Image 1: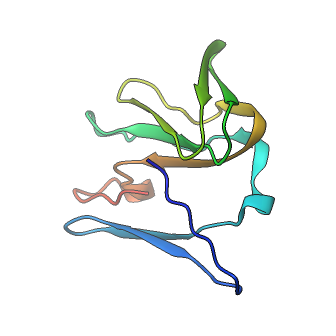
Image 2: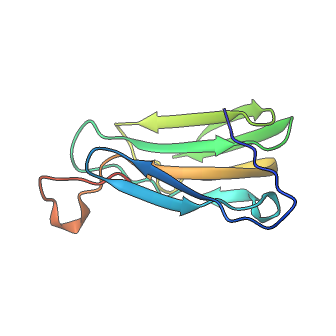
Image 3: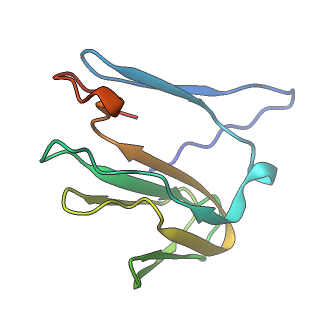
Length: 125
């Protein structure tokens, strides 16, 4: 389920995701900053079992979202405050193309980023 924030004065909204030893933060954009076309960056970790993932959030009823990954398309219809999550441990979602008939918010992530050093620890992004 999505979150809807309404205010009669300007506000800034920051969102934080945290786990035991890692955390990430992002700035939430207002509705008029959302788009209808996105390129996904959500690479797959070199460590097995970690996720490449993407989430679509729909602020409007009747939103049709198409995501194409390696020539395979997934089409979903979302209503206001609906979310759709796609995750995989077998292929990267980086390079996927997302389009919609109405503006949407798109969040992509990797559940384990070991960076270029490939150390024993990882960060989710």
